[in-house]
Length: 84
Image (cartoon, rainbow, N blue to C red; front, side):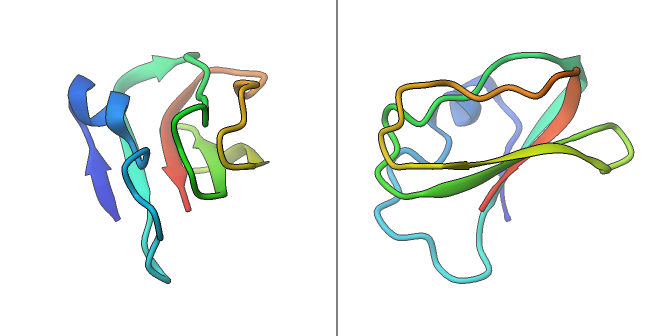
């Protein structure tokens, strides 16, 4: 897993990746629970975006299409996000 733990890394995410190697992904780390939506508008590969709580329990996940304009967001605040 690549780690997005700074604002710059979080903003970039996997948007520059043209092929995600098998078994790879990115985890977004927040210091507190947040409710920020995620978008695929600059990402050219399909992703599953999973929102997790502080104990790493999956709250909700979304299967997203490349360049999808509609943002995704769980029904509750989350601490981590995994994109695979």
